[in-house]
Amino acid sequence: MLKLVLLVLLVGQGAWAQRRPGSGQQGSASVPSNYKFTNLEIEIYKKILERNGDNSVTFSPFSIRTLLAMVKEGCVGKTKTDLEEAIGETSGIERVLAYPPRGGLTMGNVCYLSNALDINEQFKDTLLGKYHAEFQYADFNRPRSAAYNINEWVRRITNKGIQELIKPDVLSPESVFMMINAIHLSAKWKQPFDSLNTKQGVFYESEGNKLVPKLAPIMHQYGYFKMGQVESLNAKVIELPFTVPDKHSMYIVLPNEKNGLKKLIQDLKAESLREILQSLVRSVELTLCLPKFKLSTTETLRTILPQKVASIFGANAQITGISHNNNVQLTDMLHRADLNVDEEGATGSAATAVHAVLLSNSPPLYFNASHPFLYFITQQTGESRYSAPGQFATAPDNLEIYFMGHVSKLDNSVSIAAESDTRSQQPQRFDGNVERRRN
Image (cartoon, rainbow, N blue to C red; front, side, top):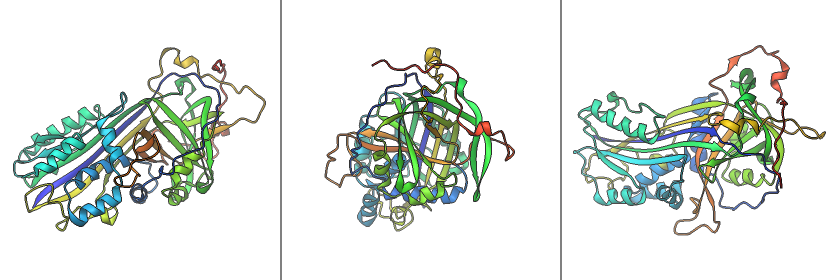
């Protein structure tokens, strides 16, 4: 049996750029009705949560959907119909691949072929035209050489974020086709964090049904942010926009209950995305406390994809559009996602703009991410993945979700006694001046 393997990669790194705090301005509460999570995203996320227990998670809905969209081009019959229903409209994916954002984001698709595979030229032309895929020859009979070439491509696309994805013992003479989608995000925030304000603080980590306080580096800043409450999720949300790449933002969804993350994820539904964005009606002055974190998740997706999507695997899959070989079948789908959020990149005068004190006698407003939270990173695109097939979205901008997941444990935390210094459990006020934008 000839084997086909699908790989999805995502690497991201957050960095900080200088920007002065702006004035609080009212934002629009109008959010297009087509801003929704897909059922595919929610089902995969919940299955990954089940597998990972208390561990933090990151994955890429965009990468998974892109690879499934490419596979769809080689499917026929019921297999293709099931994939189309699960993935939804793909014009947004095609637009991003055709016109990728400038700066901060690189992406690529590649197919490695064996001489034993009689590829369907129409399938190849579609992937070249719509998905801008590369096609390269791989001698899977020489697994060490093939693995080296594949890993070199991965290192190039991910800016060396992933050094080795494939080990030689994964490959065999039965391997004939490997399809990879990779994205590397290196983003700079519009609102900077000063590394001088990164202090040891308490983050409550998930351990079974309880939370355990741990010491970890917590970033602080005082400024203007869009923040809101999402009643259906019993959570507050804050938007952290990027300046590079443009039209990208990270959203932190923090449960109001310290131990409320699992309930929040259970309550996620398609309309939750619109409700989250709808809550961000205005910018407010606040102190933001956010832990530094690194996440890495590697998943075998075959067993956690929805049943209709999983029909692409096995002997009964209708994938004759990929190859003229009769004995080819897809064996698995692997997904790796890395995300690093810290304050690297702040230089020179950037450090002087964020030393802060509260400027009024009103009660201080905090967004303190000191317990497990959900996050997602989006890009606004010109067309919607949620439109019905053959229809265009009426809204000028729509969303593609690159990263999604949650932080429940930190890679840089250390154990502390339950009665640790209560001062570290509260956001800190900093000495210095807040530089205000002059109108």
